[in-house]
Image 1 (cartoon, rainbow, N blue to C red):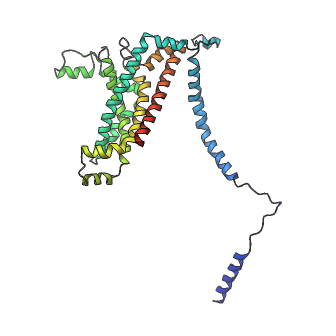
Image 2: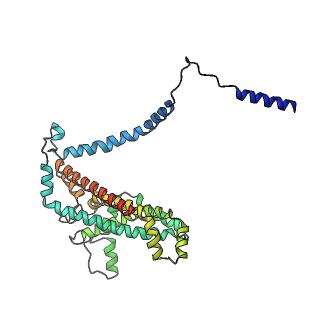
Image 3: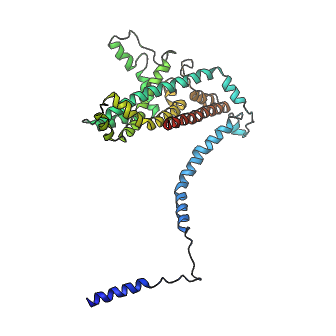
Length: 327
């Protein structure tokens, strides 16, 4: 007991001893030095990403913007001269007879692709939310085609939709639904509808993935409470699922519109913009002007118009969505 009491007195006395004052000559490290060092480390980790964005996104964007106001041709690569023409390139592409058709096709393609892909994707997402055997396997199989490049899958679709030897026409003829091959990709009336259908097939996986993730964030307790009040099936979807999924829907639709406006690979692989510009979009027309006709200035001007439309739509849509949430 005596040794324990002595130890306690020593510890008490030690605790009362004031800390040694810092000598004026001893160097004092600033309090924010560690914060500055941590901030430097953050920037060092971000530096590769920033350099990548500047080189492969920032520079091409600025270069394309400048080219839209220049007479940029193949000769420019040798002479380095690209005369400044102001808004002349924009006047040419806007007054072109193809522009109106391309703009209308772009709008129809975007609306059709989003409507079909979103409705089917939402239905599949709601279906997969229910637990059933092999549900995870089916979801995985649904996502497997997403690993294929769009060009590769479009090439397969082009072979399947061929008028003479396509699998689809052979199947329809075997069922006696058609008498001869349907010109899915060569008819001015069917080509755009066919391209939209292929785009819907390619976009379903995107909508299912995002919407399914949003559905997973809705607690089961909410559905149980709604079921007690008699809200099942469609009523549960209308009063529970849709309101709580609305923020995710806003993002999905915005991304879908941006993708639809700039899509080019599917159209080029299936129809190349034909027949008779029936599937020509603003993106494919910009590609044709730049890399087929080598009128880089006009192609850049058309790309800038498309980018401006995308930005304006995004701003208007986000503002309208914010108002809807606030109300």
